Length: 204
Image (tube, rainbow, N blue to C red; front, top):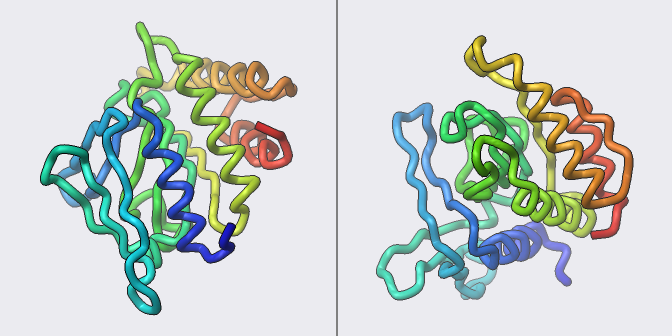
C-alpha cells in the first residue's frame, strides 16, 4: 500500500463509493447552493492516469449516465470525518467524510463530501448505517493516520431543539459501545470526539 497522501485518499474514497447507501455532496451552503447525488452503489472512480503535477486527477463516474465529477486528490489530500448538525435531519447530526486541503477550514471549505444517506429511521438514530460509518472511521483512522482527521460540531441548532442534543450524543455513544465492545461515556461533542479518536486503536 502506498503511503502517498493522494493514494491514501484514493483508497478512502473508493471504500466509501462501495457503500450503496451514501450521498455525494458538492458545493458550499455559504455560497448559496449544494448539489447532492445519490449513486445507490453505482459510482466508480477512475484509475490514476498521470504522474507528476497531475497525479491526483480522477474522474468520479455515475454508471450508465453521462454525469461525472473531476477531482484533484493532490489538492484534496485530507479526509476529515465530520459529525455535525444538518438541516436535512432537523438539525440532528449528519455523518460525513469531507475531502479538503486544510483540515482547519473543513467546516466551510472542502472539495467533496460523502455522507450516510439514512442515519435516522422514524425519528431515531438508525444503528446499522451509523455503526457502518464508525467501522469505516476506525479503519481509515488506523490505516491512514496522517491523512484522516475527526471533527465533531455541537451547533448551532435552534434553541427549541437544543434539549435533545445530549440524547443524540448518547445514542452515538451506544453505537460505539455495541460495535467495539468498549465503554464510551458520550454526553457532548467533546466526549464524542475523544471516543472517536480512541477508535484508532480498536480493531474493526
